[in-house]
Length: 385
Image 1 (cartoon, rainbow, N blue to C red):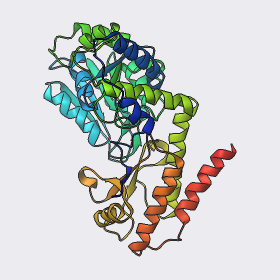
Image 2: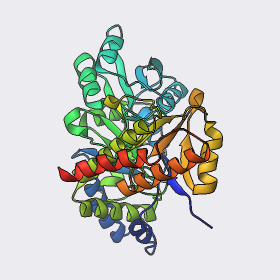
Image 3: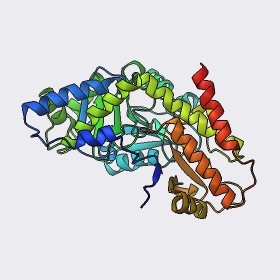
């Protein structure tokens, strides 16, 4: 039986080194060995967030950490702004509405980013905004919002906290939480972090901790003050995913072996450029502009005159190439090419080559090898620099 070539936005392939690390004999989460593992590993993750603050580990998916950020920082009836540029921005809207926040929704057309001008105009008439929520990398559309610029707008026009969903890009995109002024930054294990699902990572600014300490909204399992207190002891308040933390340590090893996080970020940027060049050469449309294109996932429009559902099914069945489909109103109109985490330029070349084989099977008109050649030229140009 063939294994699928998984080019999804998550879960993503797991490196062998990480798999082996996760096979380590289980230890108690209240042992001295675990305390050492926790402190060492979370300290090594800090550069990926761009922070000197503690990294908190939640035994959950990324959505639970997003909910924790909301419920710990905001109380019912308070004003919040949620920037949404796709399906996962709408997640934040749903979370905030569930807890009774007064939600002001800044909504952009799918495929467009939220600019600093958009946010500036949206905030002008609003008063007493407690928090602004934004998605750094919108998985449903392949958009990378200009978070650094948005943070400046938030802090220049309001006293609000800036809370950011980095689930689908932390580990593959630059993040400077402290320098940019992000107050809470969240990610999950199963995307650019190269781990299986089940672990969320979160960091909180000093400014946000003061707000959280005064917040009266009740939380138990997602109480970040509890996670902060236990983190000081090198533990979590509840039983953590010990094996995933061993895996996280191995992920840090891999990033070091690549030459540091800057090299990891550069690899993701390169793969983004390779995919976009390949699709252009094949005359296949892209949902987003180059200016705000994600380094971890590319949203690709259906090739002309091809039934996308049939094409994707064919790629998976015949060539074992597994892409993610579109979400919401874009279902059946686009697909998503994941190039994050344990993915390299050679993987991009393989996927583009198999895409071309599938296009030939569907009698799509193109110059054979054009996509691979374009991607290869981008790769070779980067090597010459």
